[in-house]
Length: 244
View 1 (spheres, helix red, strand yellow):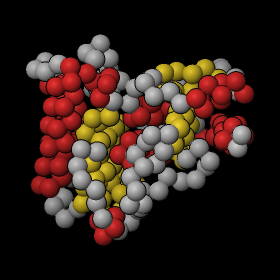
View 2 (cartoon, helix red, strand yellow):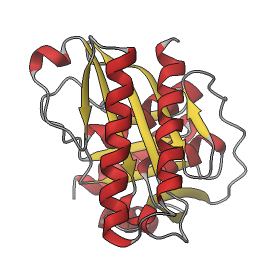
View 3 (cartoon, rainbow, N blue to C red):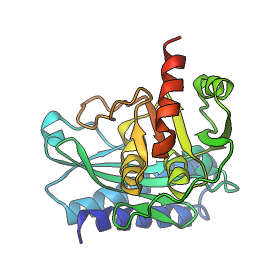
View 4 (tube, helix red, strand yellow):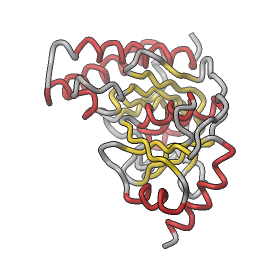
């Protein structure tokens, strides 16, 4: 299968495994087993299907410059561990992305709801009907910047879990934007950014720079995913807030 379909298939398989584990474990043990078993599944399948490719996982070890110059799969076996451990929550996801020579070429976000969004068959952004602008923000790591944004723009802040869940919410029209400041890594954003771009959304750092997946430092810190028509307004407002 091609890279797009492989990303989608693997993300969906890991999501299904994680869903089954919820009936066998609970609390912190559920989170540990979920992280471990989903990581093992994804790494094992990538070794079988793409044995010459490198893999960077949140649950794995760092990769060197040589690996980053070729084909590198960036995976988050369980994005939203806190939400996953709470059986009443369904805002966690699995991320699988492929970077070639530093450029995102394929990706998939498998949602706990059972839907998988990928570059294999992207759905264009639907028309926006939100008024005021709806902005997805982290539920558990809410940065002060988003509250400042709400004071300078007429926006409604919508708390959600996983970065993948928030990005897909932009792609499906549930929200107009996703803003995050601080504490992200390449595995948090690679698959969501690939899926967002394939759908026609804007994805960048808060200052408009492209997110760099060539860097050996996995930290990416901040992220903006939004409808393209609201990107200028949000980037302008964010520039003023960051400059303070």
